[in-house]
Image (tube, rainbow over the protein chains, first blue to last red):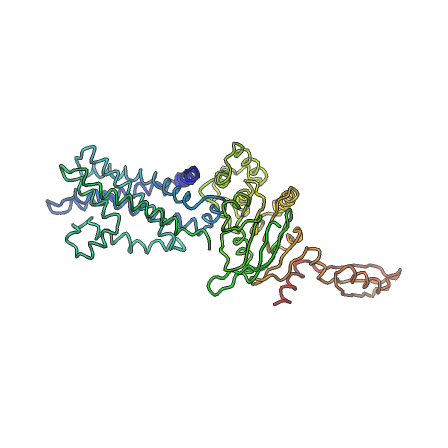
Length: 245
Length: 282
């Protein structure tokens, strides 16, 4: 754990030394949310912008965490630092733990900023409990995204190889996870495919908590699945992160 | 023996990177690995530090298997890869500290970091980001990261390439100082003048060992040219092997006397001899 903290500290230090990257990681989602607000305002009356606003916020954090972490790990490999830090004595689990900690701080800032802007721009009136749940689900999705990024990096020999996974993993989840369309309207097989994406469960939680008078007990299965997703990917990433050629 | 390699083979698909390497490195020596690009030097070093899984053969470093006992072994080894492999956004000091923390927990860490920064002459730029450094400066930081935890055996993959002559000299002085303290250094280089500074060298070509010997013994495998200028202005040139016995016999046969104005012996340099060995055995 101590060494994971050292790696996490190093990741954060690197991020802080690159204010342009750090700024873009925070402001880009805010600008996208603003564009969505413009889009929602241009739609005919009755457009349920509330139904889309939070899931889109979650998706942006999911997408950015996945890409940033995936590229960062691939860079570690191509620059030889991954090999070197393993030989120096850091273990795979400590490296993964360190990346999760480091990017989690970034994802927490992103989640807070995005959620605050969405609530303010769309003039959403949620109870404190709902806001906490929404924050928690975005935050948890960010952890899963970091793990997914580490896992995907195994299959990439250079940074460019991460990008083909966007149409393969990230974009299908937009259509199949219920973010745009109620997933029960999809063909049965597509519903099963949709359930393979973590965004499905995050979206399901978001859709429940924005409805009035929901029971928090109904959120439990989705939260458990998201947690299992994170733990499962942690194990898979630990096995697939190569430490020898 | 600090390093024991027996019939080591590493294949990448159909490409044979190492073809049955066997070598032994005694304690407290500088062991040089010489060879052209693609000879397998880096692959061999990576196999010794446990970053490459051999296809077959056995490897032991400090009596430990680099993969089966990797964590125990990694406590005691230092590794400097061919590329700097540093974090460009971080300062030299932060990079060194980060590598030091992988092993050291002691309160003397900061003191050790300062010492190594001073040795590698990075003091003035210790807090600058490594990304702004020249290639030679990055090598200094990389060397500092490899030495920071005072390892027992040190693997250096072309450590002084692109380093200025002053630091190169200082680095080799340090390597010698380290071996005098019982440390073992395994260094790859393509710089022939550096080969002379090793206690023993192995010449590698296309994944195979061409020869293993001391630099002195390899020098003796070359030829010497004896140039004699006579008082009457005539000149004579004789070639013979550089081995002391052969050289002495040739000189004796020349019957050098008062009629000789100048007498010069020119020995083949190590680069010429090594290239000749590599080309002869092709």
